[in-house]
Structures are given as structure tokens and as C-alpha cells.
Amino acid sequence: MELKEIDELIKAVSKFPGLGPKSAKRIILKLINNKDEIMKPTINALANVYKNISRCNYCGALKSLKEECNGYKNCNNLQKKFSKICVVENIADQWSIESTNIFSGYFHILGGTISGTIDKSQRQLVDSLVERVKKQNIEEVIVATSATVEGQTTAYYIEETLKNTNVKISKLAQGLPVGGEIESLDDGTLFSAFKNRVQI
Image (cartoon, rainbow, N blue to C red; front, top):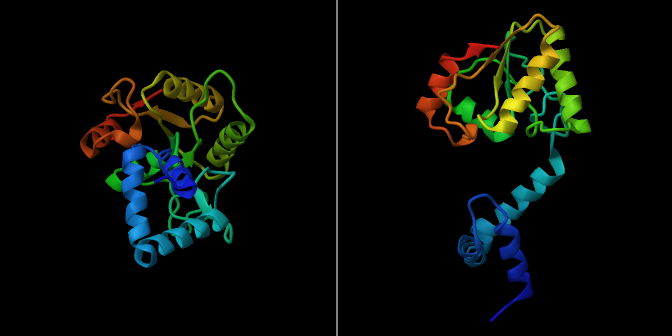
């Protein structure tokens, strides 16, 4: 028996990373069989995030629409001032690095890599990185992009953009596997890459 609503939901859930139609069906059945305990709270949480969470135009981090971006290790950390900014491609990379507790500083999330052309939002985030370096007296920018062609192109672009600021620019050590994504690295590899970063 096919139901249009279920088919549409399977297609939508199948778009999540690591999920195919079979996994999506299992998830949907679990939701349907647990409407009050799982489905309703999930719907409410998703609606709440949809309405109230966005990305900061200045640092790229997630923020509440009700507040300025002054969250943990973002634009204006109110508890402590840092001298380093770690530039990452996406929020998943930020979360991976934060979970290891190997970096104390601000994050700057680009929202992707820079290939041949740079779009308006990426240009704004790169410009705001330069502004942050100057305004916040940043001593070091750590470029933590993936070891892919796009990631290395992005690292080079950031280096060129920051070369007139006199800030120390370093990148993660090449212990990263070529073609590897930051978010999929184990803690040991990520720790080693951070500790053995080199100035560029």
C-alpha cells in the first residue's frame, strides 16, 4: 500500500547524509509508531530551529535570531578574549574541532569552499575575517580547511587576502589524508594535525 504523504516524507528524509530509502523508512515507521513520544517533539524542535536559528553574517556561526552573535567562541565571546581564529569550511568542522578541546579561540565558518568564483556571502565572510583580525587584535589565523583541491584553493585564497594584515597564518599539518574531510577525522588525527600546524 502506497501513501503519497509517506512517499514524500521518505524522499525528504533520504536526502539526509548517510540515509537512503531503507533507513528513511525505518525512521519514519519509528516516528509513526511513537507520535507523542518522538514525532511531536521532533516536529516542534524542527519548527523552532526553522523560525529562530540562522547563520551570523559576520562569523558564519549559528545564532539565535533573538540575540546578537555573542555565543561560545564566535563573534564576541563575553567570557574571554582570544588571540586566535580558526577558519573552517562548515559548522560540522567547527563541532568536530570543539569536541576535541584542542583549540581555544574564535571560529570563522565560511559555509563551503572557494573554487573558481566566490559568491556574495563568501566574499562577505572573508571580508569580515579581515575585519575581525584587525579589530580583535588577532595574532594567528589557523586555516583548517580540508585536504581537497577545493580546500587547498580556499586556504590559498585566505592567505592572499590576509597577507597585508601582518597576522601569523598557519594551516593544519599534512597528517590530514589527501581528499579527507575535517568532520570525518578521528580525534587523534585532528589533535596531531593541530599540534603540528605550520605557518604559511
